[in-house]
Every structure is written in C-alpha cells, then in structure tokens.
Image 1 (tube, one colour):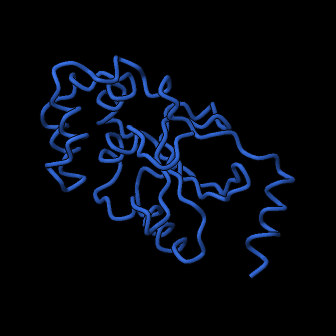
Image 2 (cartoon, helix red, strand yellow):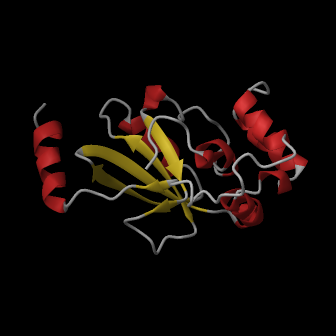
Length: 173
C-alpha cells in the first residue's frame, strides 16, 4: 500500500469518477486511490479511495462521497493500527476501456480528450509529472500494470486490533 506519494490511480483514474478534486488533499486527510483491495479481491472491477479517519473532516468527506453516483460501498478499516474510511466505487461503463488502459500501464494509448480531462481535473496544466507522463513517446512505467506497481490497499488488521483501536483512539475523547 502506497501512502504519501500519490498513486497513479489517484493521478489518472480519479478524474473519471469525480467532477472536482476539492477533497483529494491533506486538509481532508486523503491518503490515496487504489485499483484493488487485498481484503476484498471479489471487487476486482472497483476503485478504492482511502481517507484517514478524522472526526473533524469525516462529515464533509462522507457527504461528498455519498453524492457520487458511482459509490458502491464504504467501510471503516484498520490497517497497521490506523483507522481509515474506505470508499469503493464502480468503474463507469463509459470509461471502462480507458481505465483498463491506465491500469495496464499504456498511458500513450489514452486519447487526447481523456488526457486533457485528467490534466484539467487537477487544474494545473504545468504539473510536469502528470503532463510529462501523458505526453511522453515512451511509457516511463515500462508497461507495468498498476497492480504490479503495488497500487493495492494493504491487509487489514485482525478484528481484535480494530476494536482496540476504536477503544483507544475514538472513544477516549
């Protein structure tokens, strides 16, 4: 599970699920987006968006996510003794092909229209890591799929640890 640096799923797939990037920052405790969740392998055609659980931002984030027509489910999960809110989204039919192309690592095969959609979503045409990857003549990922790059939600803690986490961190206030 990649935490900190933004995953390619965050950079390139979120623009196909959301109209705005307003919650995808540190202010709202956004962690990352992933193509898979090791704990839910049966949801292999979904996108997983994780936020650190925070009582100050939960309501804003949750309300925004619930408005999204692609929301499939949400779960409170504990990973490495840290609590996260996980939102699970279905991949829209109209974007299945382009998202599969991204998941497979073939960024050069994305149409100009979709590349522009990704860049405009982040509201910064000068994001060199973003624009450069989308415009390069050779895929800098060496054709690695996002799964091969480790863009998968990590294993959850056993249920006993989750209960202890809740007791220790949530109900202690």
